[in-house]
Image 1 (cartoon, rainbow, N blue to C red):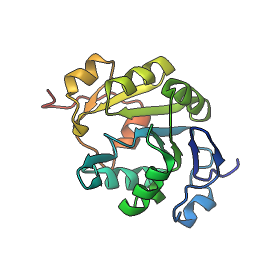
Image 2: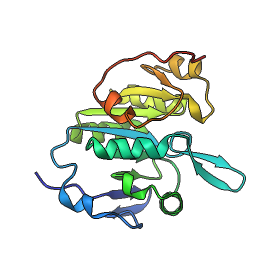
Image 3: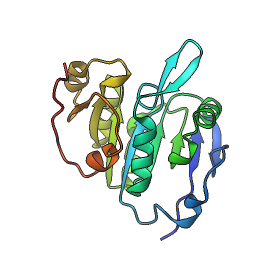
Length: 188
């Protein structure tokens, strides 16, 4: 199998083979070669929270990225945010090495998820909004809600989330791509 390099796609931008940030050598050594599973995350509302001064990582996001890498599960970022902004924030937040694929400027998330699912049959979507959950369901991808970004868990469940996660952790990518359903206690 061919090794997978990090790649970026943006609306109106030709495909780029590398995210414009420092990427560790492990990408070159086929860490993800042959992987049939991946986890798709949102940038805003899942990995990053917006504040007045800019963006900060969601609590547990760095652990999630390290855990996914340790389990050889590619992390795909789907976002409507411009590719330049994602690259800049990923560099500043020091998480670029944890991102396998960044698809920026997404207009049709369901179509992007369907395309990803052909490459990764065990694709799971962790979403922070009702629209993202519905898009994952339309694409036939297992969808989990993340309520730590500000959207109430009940709204994410009503949109079709299999389960709602109140926090990110090191084992999340492994759990959701294994398609194990689990309950989260104390979630409104």
